[in-house]
Every structure is written in C-alpha cells, then in structure tokens.
Image (cartoon, rainbow, N blue to C red; front, side, top):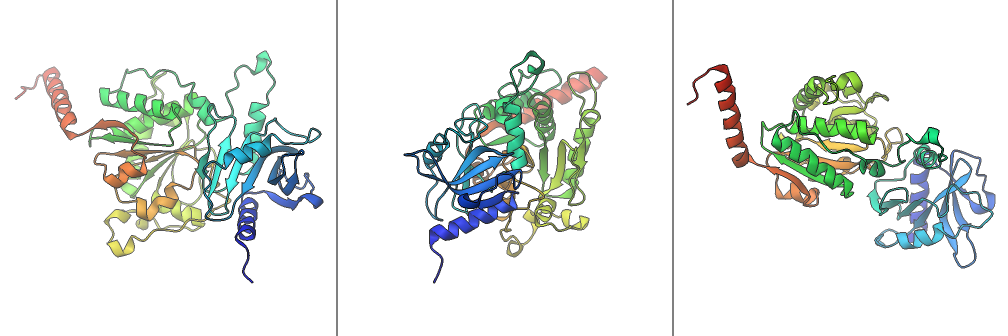
Length: 399
C-alpha cells in the first residue's frame, strides 16, 4: 500500500532536517540533550494551540517550529499557523524567546522560513533547513545583555545590519557606479531578494560589485560573498579587480583587509570573505565532485542546446544553504536560468545580477527589479567625454 501524502511529507522533512544536522525524535522519547539541534515531532502545546509538527530545540531551549504540509499544498499564508504554534509554548518550557523566533513551513519538497529577528519579518523560500549552529549564532547575538560594554554589537541578522549602511560617498566612483550601488543598497534595505544591475560594457560593472561587496562586508558584516561567473577567464578578471581595488577609507587594497579566494577546487577557504567561482565548479562542489580546470574555460551558454539540460541539485551538508550571504551573478543575461536555476537558488542569499544586455528571462528571474539601467546609448557620450578630457590633459589634439 503506498504511503499517504502526509506520511511521505513527514519522511522527506525528517530526512531534510537530519541532513542539515538536526536530531529528529518523537515527543514521547525526546532527549533535548542529544545534539545541538533537536527536532521533536508532534510536540503538545498549551490548551487550544494543538500540536507543533516539529519543535526545534537549540542548545536545550526551544527556538522554532516547523509546520508540515503534504506535497502540493500551497505554503502561502501557512506562516500564520506556524506563528500560532510559536506563541503556544507551555509556560514551563525552556525557550530562547517568546514567541519563538524561527518559523518554517515545509512539504518536504518546498520550504519557507521566517526569521523574527529581521526588521520586517516575512516568509521566504529556502532550499532546505538552516543548520542548528547557524540558528545558535543568531540567538546568541540577539540574547546579548544590554550593557555598555556590548553597545558595539551588531544586530543578529544581515537584513537588520543592512539597514545601518551609511550613505555612499561619490569620491572615486563614476556617476553610473555611484547610482548603481546607491540603488542596490536601497533595494536591499527594502528586503527585495533579487536585483538586476544593467550597465554597458566598459562602464565598470565588476568595480561596482566590488564596491558593493566592500560596503556589505565592512558595514553590514556580510560573512561570505560569492562572485559567480560562467567561464574561467571572467573569474581571473574579477580576481584582479578585487586585488586592485583601493578602499575609500584609507586606500588599502581590498585583499589587504579581506581574504579573496578564486576557487580552483571544491574546498572553500573558511576565512575567505569573497569567493570567486564558475557556476560549473559551484555545481561540482555541491555534488561533492572535483572539476577539471579545462571544463571551466567554455561557458555552458556556448554549448550546443542538446548539452544544456537543467542540472539537478541536492542538499550538501558541507555547503549549507546559509554558506553565502550575497551572490553576484556576472553576465546574468546568459541563458543560465533553465540550466543552472537550482544552483542559483540553492543559497539563502540575496541574488544580484550584472549584465549589459538583459533578456526577458533575465528580467523575469530578478523579479523585474532593475535597480540600475545604464545602456550603450547613455554610456557612449560619457566615454567620449572621458576620452576627450584625457586627451586634453595629456596635450593630445581632440578631434
């Protein structure tokens, strides 16, 4: 007899939680000291609140809930039910906060997540569950006592810290770059998960991304930024841009302050704040496989259509969904969405596209959120003026 949809969903949720590092137990035999993160099935709540499908314990205290639905059920609006569970904790239950801060809804195939520590909490789709140690770090940062010696502590979530970004100084930036970074940060403060920057070739798209990365790391404490390309030579160019970037504060190079890794294997440097990778290598890393360097030289976009099949992605506990905070996608106009879409959507991160020539598919993928439009027609007069000024100051006759 085939499994019921409800039971199959629970089995898939169990498996996803276990892969993400959770110990899954029944309420009648629960041992909340069995691991750093323990997910207790069918936990009884206060009268009138029913049962939580899963109660999540972190370091021995309740921190979140998971509402289970069968596959195919829409998750939109289900966070209201999860919220009801989160406020129905028995009074004697040890908790981190009341109401509980972390709310998940899942069918075992689709999952969404709400973090109450965000400035404007709202549900968002995630590939899978966060690891217990990640939730523990958010809890610890939010539970710091309010004493003068802790005044320098930043909010626990990136979305909260982004709200504290200082105004951008225009010095050292072209007008288009200044506008692109300013508009991008405005979009991030609105908590828009995807943004597209359209800038003509030669107008400094990568420099713009480096500037934004520096500010997000320095002022918002972004833990890891991924700069994603679709062929190796673009990765080498991006690395040079990071290496040559002089920070606006004291002129030191970006790489003097933060580690930047050009990924040439499936091992990410744990202290790297920026990782540059081809999407092919990232996919191999998620699969736990090595990739020959020559396989990165040709863009998948240039391959015959027969070889551009969508790639399946499964959760990799060595590369959890929270591994990167920000993902820049270079050459985002290329037809990567049908082939690499699951790779791009794997991380619980803000996705930022860079392109000179967006397609309809590009606009669609980035939710029509075009934060900067600086096309060829706008760029040509600027470049001509720049060349004329350079020739004037060098004494060269301008034609």
